[in-house]
Length: 329
Image 1 (cartoon, rainbow, N blue to C red):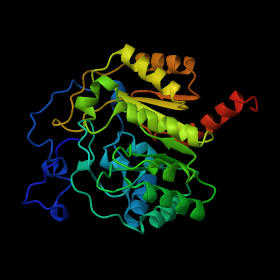
Image 2: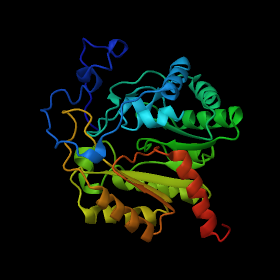
Image 3: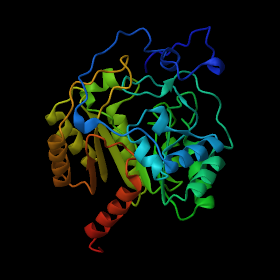
């Protein structure tokens, strides 16, 4: 894990997470990394409209964080205008220091016992058919937040029983054996955990994580509950090769992963990992075709693909693909 140091003059309670230096104290000492100019296929419209404003109001009213805002997702305008938001539980501060991520790092606050209920209320108010719940890494907690995930899933089931639930979890790397089962047994419809990049780039891109641990986590989900859809994603444009991406696809299929997402890495600030290159739409299409040929039930591979982008529509397609596979579609 990256060494995260908070200046004595800026205690957690007083941090301004809009200030880059306070948001990413572990990156403040680094030099700036230049990235190439964004091509036309990367540009998106600025957030606006009544639907966007209403989604934002519901999030604020229920005091909820979203990864859409915290990670600087380029699709926030499109998704929020449709009433879709990926809720980020367990606070806004992550205990990891990944070089690609825009979520603030440091010492998180204590868990909010009422958060699962507030998430469920927001899901009901938004009228969501499908919801995505993610979180920061919480290496400070004995169970990594597993029980909090389970409580959130159960709260949504009670408040909005018709909503399907997708979770995007941390890796629970430092937790005791059996921790993962707490989340699996809460019965999410989709269990997502992102590998993020190829194994050779882990030391510089995802230093607090372990590639094969993450891969094994997803395999364990399938072993315990084969009916749960599993999902994982990677970013490209970090310096990986096509051959390395193909190997990750093969590793994922060996772990039984159903759904693969591939998107372009975008540098949040000059202090973050540089963009090595912008992968063309044609290359993304080739990745999609290769992934389907390897046996994935669902693939989303475009420059602006993110883990929860079009998650509801993709879940319906994923379910239909399984039925076809079983000869029931």
